[in-house]
Image (tube, rainbow, N blue to C red; front, side):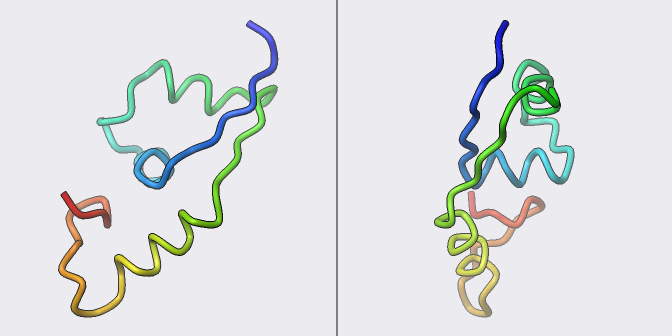
Length: 66
């Protein structure tokens, strides 16, 4: 498989960073491949900050609601 450009959504980013078992091995392998380019939207930064604000009540083990 050739070089890939991968755009992560907020959940996948957090699952990857915290080694969450919810992230399938195929995704983990592709994201860890140094030939692939990983992108994260600035909206993910906003979402993470918003979720961690006091009073949002949207925290669980991964820092995401749900």
